[in-house]
Image (tube, rainbow, N blue to C red; front, side):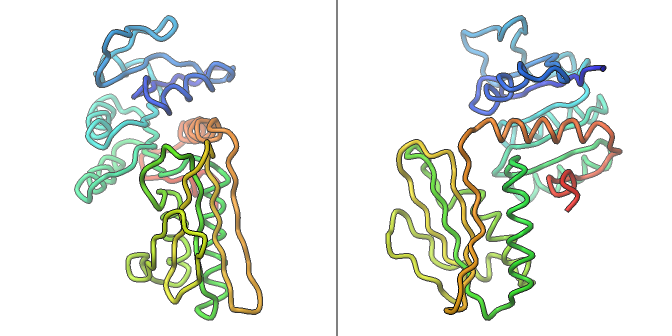
Length: 258
């Protein structure tokens, strides 16, 4: 079987390192190049020379997997467009103009963008939307998330994605029904809006729950992550799926066919 040739941007970052580690165990995928914004003293990863983002770095790849920064991702997309290469984007934090640019680029090359590459989390987002729509406004919603003590931002990006799914089920934007955002609080009530509870402790990879209640029952949709490799596995699954696609703007929901 012919191996899928991929390039990894941000190869020295947390996700770049994890992707390389995961690919070493995958006989169907081959890394042909790795890039980094600031190379520093480390010049190689295995037999691969660390390069800057360039036409030369990406010319022999089929899919570029990008977990970097918004500005770096835009730079990668410009090169990908010239070379007609497919791109999987796991980077977050884009501004409105950057989001618009990405969608415009997808008219020329296949682009898959997701704030979370976990297959399970993306199913959970879909279930949150479906449950919210089915139960209606008589059920109140709250979202809980736990992460390791090193994570500073809250609620997590994934918790907000779950909130967006639940809000979409109600036909509203999360901005309109965003409630309280609590950190390390034991008392966490339901409210008329979607409340968020975040906890930071230990080395937790990531736990997320969406709860619905009407005072007579509680429905709890939960996802617990135990290994960070689930994100790299999801990204590789997305890359393999994208190889057969024409230019367009895709998400993990497309990959999962939901």
